[in-house]
Length: 247
Image (cartoon, rainbow, N blue to C red):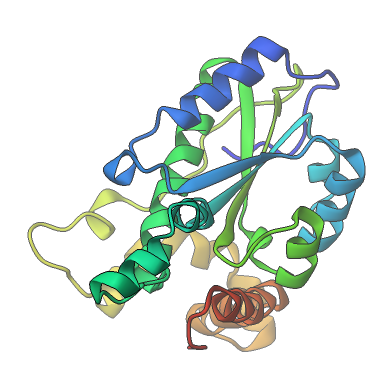
């Protein structure tokens, strides 16, 4: 479950260290650790993130970690070793980060983030992923002085579970709709009806009132929602800042 309300006490230093240590021990491509983590301790920055991401609980979280897909570190390293000049001498093209590098570093960052989540849970600390960090690129670049090849892929908030909170697992789709054997499988209309039966029943009255089908309501409410449109605009800006062509 995603925890959006926290016990009113700071996370102990031992627990903070354990969560971050777990993130740093995550599997990583070539042991390159193609990510960076910003521990957002400044309350003004938390409050600003609460505004830009649209979630007040960010400002109330005792531990906020920003995970960056980070190729900047390695290319700064290459610059210290005169790699561009070396490439010119050797007749090699100096290749700056491309889309494949971004995707690989995003994988590294998200694996590290999930390691942190699991470690936190073992300590009685809940968490919440905030994907809205991908929106408002310009504000977030300014807030954290992000260089071109550092891409904010996810924000995590952490806090101890309140004593009065009832913990329950959020329902997930049955595995037969998600896990395939050997090849990809497209779902039929009947598959979707079965997969989404509970959701359709829950929103039957809303759909009837709006004269919409569930696919139409999902498209309008999620794919075309204001946060998703802002993220699309923002990611285009970040890709351009990375040096990639706008999709």
